[in-house]
Image (cartoon, rainbow, N blue to C red; front, side):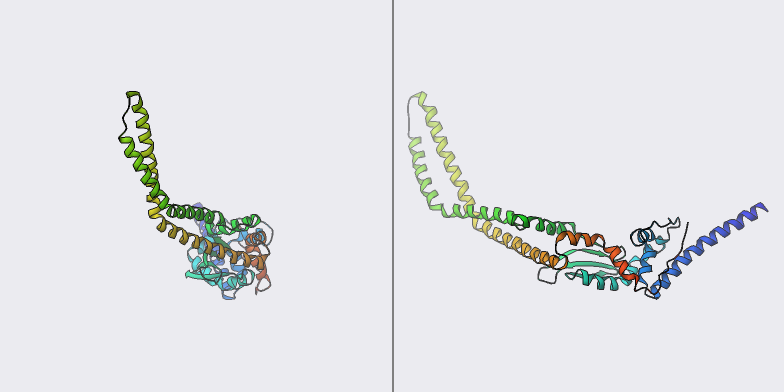
Length: 294
């Protein structure tokens, strides 16, 4: 009798657990069918929803119901993307999105030539996952404006300085040739010198000094020989860096037009989840959420 009661109790617990999962899935299905994106987001992450939207703490579900749909996040993301991207288009008019596979979206900054791949849009979590390198370039570019510099100013100046030195080496070739002729004559004279034993050390030092000067001039000749190719490579690199500075200027101008400054842009990124879901509240056909307790 006791075993039968235990079995009945276990069956009731299991039945209730299954019913809870089925209720969660049916509620999610109903929300999708009536286009209630707000409730879909609530069901996907109740703890975050209650904290950021209702400003309260949700009861922790030991059933981890959200995990029931982990394997269909791409389909959920694809479904939720239309309304979210339409909303983002008004807030971030300079961002463009490409669904490169189901439910995953690349972010491009701008619609101009050489626009940058700037990261990814996480639709399910309503957040931007910016490429950290590209984002840091933009942030640094804003910071350098206070110094009246662009991101690549220092690099371009260093490369230009190198090219100027190489050009001077090329221009100085006739001077080096004359100097080498004189040094070879001195070397010839040195080899013909003879003197007392105590003078031999001085003659050797003089010879070594001449050889050192000729070696230095030969090194400069070799640098000058490759200088044209290096200067061309430097010019190409400066062009790339200058283009990047131009693109960054377009991006900064776009951010200023939409947010005034980089700080407000950052702040809006941080509040995007709450801002978007609050914008959905008045558009939902039902404000009720699934009631799944511990």
